[in-house]
Amino acid sequence: MVAGFIVLCLNTWQLSLIRADTPILDVILILAVRGLAVGLTLQSTFVTALGSVPLDDLPRGSSLLNSTRFVVQAVAVAVLAVVL
Image (cartoon, rainbow, N blue to C red):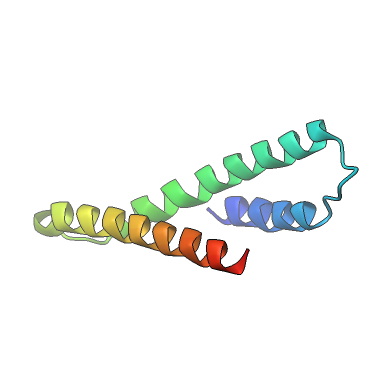
């Protein structure tokens, strides 16, 4: 998980360096690395969060985690649309 966050931080810095004349292959490579980093961090974080939930409450914890993720994603898209 730590390695995923480190790669994600470095990749965010790389995204800040993209300009209009950046080759499309470089952008694709940066986004592919970002996908890998997000995969390393999200799944590990979800497993860690659900690992601390008692077995009796695991269905509720899983549904709460997923619904929270969807709500936060929707709010983030709405905020981004307002900003743009």
